[in-house]
Image (spheres, rainbow, N blue to C red):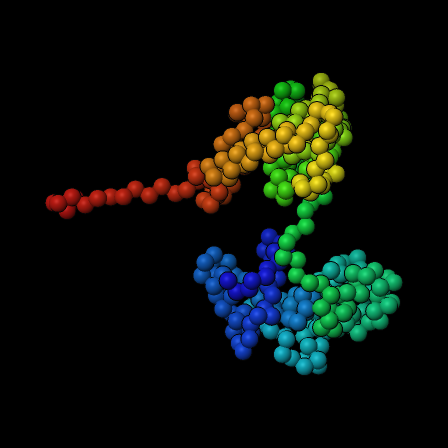
Length: 344
């Protein structure tokens, strides 16, 4: 590995801590990273190195404008004047964390580039752009205010919502979809070792089809106790659907949202009610087995009957790429041809 500490910032971007790298040309180190990624994935990447996360992002912006850097730039060894020469090339709207709305505001006050922002009064910035803006200014000055987040914070809300492949009218098919989406969010909930205290279900017709009657609704259920047990969550979700469903409408989308999320280790079972420590342990073991089977043998190897089998309502995915690393059924099959003694 290139770094023991990595923050996965987005699907195509990450921050690496290179403080452990000594007596190495960091530009060459960046090119090595770039070459290794290409070797293993055939994906072209750019690498920017700075003393702060914001300066590393600015290095990336400069690399995009200058092909002569070959996709790699280290600004850690530059004197202040040279860093400013790079920052003046970056429009303020391209500064990490600024965005278009704030950039228009800053432009009105003569702040056009990253260099202008660097030398802006931090108290004025804090008053107008909050503490986040002040941190950006300090980061541009080489003062680290945004440490690496090597562990993603648990999500406070988890949702699964998709448009159907066709319009759905029957309650039975809606139940299949709601149950399937509930199973998805429950799986995500367990992946982050959390429990949910509330569940919301929503349904709606096709708002783009003005020739049909329109209807949309949502229903929120406060769960009797925090849980990540799929059967219980499905049961509550279907109760919500039953309360909302209206005949005579063609539904195009539904979704399930989990909220009031708490860590698994703070569960407080009801000692005098229907939920106990034994129930919690038993449910956890069962879902661990279900998740393990689906992880090893592919999604929906084990699923609940109410989710349906054919699922003709599901969103069409005609051009979905093969998932060689997560589905056994997508792995390429290679036939071995044996040569006989006579050369055939």
